[in-house]
Length: 192
Image (cartoon, rainbow, N blue to C red; front, side, top):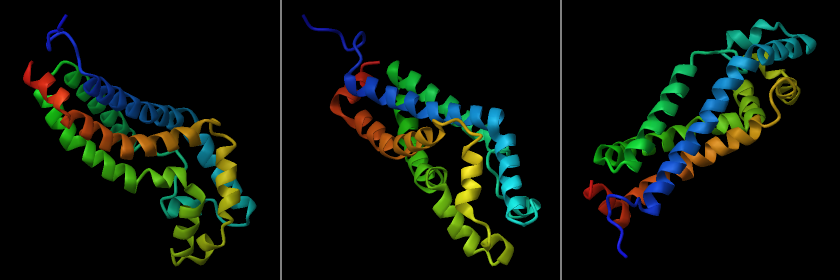
């Protein structure tokens, strides 16, 4: 018995929508971490800098935040809402969803490739930035101890969420675009 294209969603579209929804999860978790643990992480970082004999304000002077800045939260919330909306549009066969996915996922790919590694490889990237800052006090900070002090007040799963965010924003975005370009997906959107 044949199923009508209107009643059955192709696996490619379902998988693309699932990937979009899964990509939203690390952004939700990151928002939770900033709100619930960010201030304590920043306080731990400042205490560690003071323990190393440097002024705690040094981090703030150089814009170094370990989660106490809520300025990025609107972007995270917007990404979650966009991904959820795109997933729903795609599942419902709306051509606009596929078109906007083809626009948004490459943007997310670039953002993921540029920004998210800083959340995964915190210590080496921070150490490199501190050494090249030109500020001798900043260059003296023991970055490994600094990062360790903040991770002690953060949830243990945070690093895994950052790795998932990196994989989903980069490889996941490529897969979403490819899945929505498959012939089965084209038929799904044409049939609606």
